Amino acid sequence: MKKHWEVLVVDDEPVMRESLAAWLAEDGYTVDTAESGREAVTRAAAKDYAIYFVDLKMPPGLDGIETMMEIRRLHADASVIIMTAYATVDTAITAMKEGAQEYIVKPCNPEEISLLVGRIIKVKNLQRENLILRKKLAKQYSFHDILSKNPKMIEIFDLVREIASLRSTVLIQGGSGTGKELVARAIHFSGDRASKPFVAVSCAALAENLLESELFGHERGAFTGAVERKRGKFEMADGGTLLLDEIGDISPKLQVDLLRVLQERKFFRVGGNEEISVDVRVIAASRVNLQEAVAAGTFRDDLFYRLNVINIHLPSLRERREDIPLLASAFVERLSHELGKAASELSEGALRVLVDHDWPGNVRELENAVERALVTSKGHVLDEDDFAFLRREAGHGNGWAAPDNMSLDEIERQVIMATLNRTAGNVKEAAAALGIDRSTLYDRMKRYGMSRTGVE
Amino acid sequence: MKAIRLVRVGDPSPDLVDALVVPLAEEFGVPCSIDVRRIDPLFAMHPERQQAHSSQLLAEILRDDGGGDHLLGVTSLDLYIPILTFVFGEAQMEGHCAIVSYHRLRQEIYGLPHDGELLESRLVKEAVHELGHTLGLRHCEDWECVMASSHAVEGIDLKGWEFCPACRTIVDQERTVSAL
Ligand SMILES: [Zn+2]
Ligand SMILES: [Zn+2]
Image (spheres, rainbow over the protein chains, first blue to last red):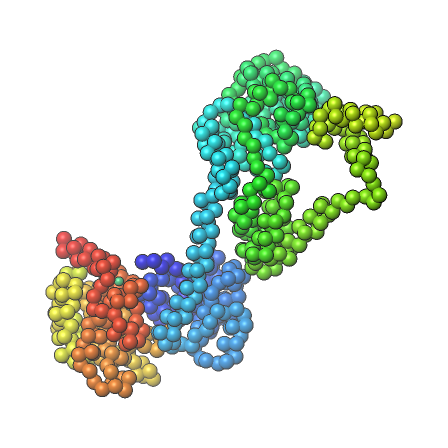
């Protein structure tokens, strides 16, 4: 009872059709029949069969070869066995050239046909086992769409399960593309708020006043352009979870407003005087290290403490290289389907390139790389050449060359100057970026004769 | 399955038909007897192939609804279905009719001297096999099981008369169900 393969028998002669169908049924296959090429194509469109037996000589319109070609248009890997009554070399050659897996001459020796079918099924079985194995593997390491077998990540999965049903705020920190939003979703969907809304806002994208109305909503006429009353994200997320992404980017004024909502669970719409109460679990995410921002004075410590009740730090992809093959295969499987590409596997060479790459953009960058490779790929296997662009990019990125005849002092002077220019003279920020404390930075600035805005 | 009735198709050797009765009764645990009906196979003969169309013979046997009995046609004729050069037998899957031929079970076909005992044992295996199909059994992966598929006598000689434990369970279930 281990076979569940489905076979389609296509023949316009009822006797032929039925007798082959009955014979295959004894062998344990589930058999469908079609009395014309048209019907065969309709059936093939509804589902893919393991094997198609197609009679060569059928009425004009859709003969055997044309039927086979239509089926292969639907399922590129379809196994088609062409049945012919006369063994002319010509028809056999045509059939094979057009992609028939095999052809048989009627009447056919039962042993021959049995071996033929057995051989095709054996290959299909292997393919299916591979697929099942891969799916099982993916499932085993999957937690709400996050794939990992890295111990740190598995610890995070456990933590997420534990805290899912609490109302405490969560702060998720990690580089860009490490999957902060996925973790936030996992928290929401594994807890008892799962049936309520999950709302995400990126605080980076919007100007202060826009973000304010985005979060808290506004009353009609609150400001120019506020032609209608609008509900904010806090109201939309009532009963559920609100993800504030890139929280490190919000202005000091909004930091105060947010603090108030977290403390009192109440707020006013912009331009409104009715106080609104909500039950929202807040999850904040940040790409920059908020603790450092607090130390640098750009982020309120009281807000940080409120957000940081549960802290999750997501490792970079570099820190979980063992996940790269798992993630890459999952992306190939999903994206090849979406892009309509045949590639379903990564060669060992390709995997080596991927595992060795540094992935500054983390999992998202890996996904983009797989997509880019798939778009230009031709065959069934993605190999290292398909990922050649990674090497070129890495070459540019790491290709920092020391300038000729430059002393260490001069290099240091230039780096400090460039950093101060970038922070518009903000010494606190520049010191944080350079990884030294403020007094050290002042020392150096004095040594190189610099003011806050650059060289004197 | 209440009982098994053997329907002679054409003019099979009485000794061979006789030889089926006791083994089939024992294997299926129901009475087995030779039916009074005999089918004239002429209508199913293919003039060029000199073979009888087994599906057509099966259809003829099927005209008797059996009344709870399973019917097994036995013939000395070479059987075929249009797509294949020959078949040893054919069964109505989960039905009540089957047919079996001993034409190609004879050593003489392969240029070897007659072996009555071997022929009898091959015929019993094929009869059990086809009746197994009428109980809904499909080909079995266990090569020693009587339900293993065999397209050559070598394969038939390799397997036993009996059902493997898995197939046996289904046969026994069928029997209990119809006994109720
Ligand atoms: Zn069989
Ligand atoms: Zn078995």
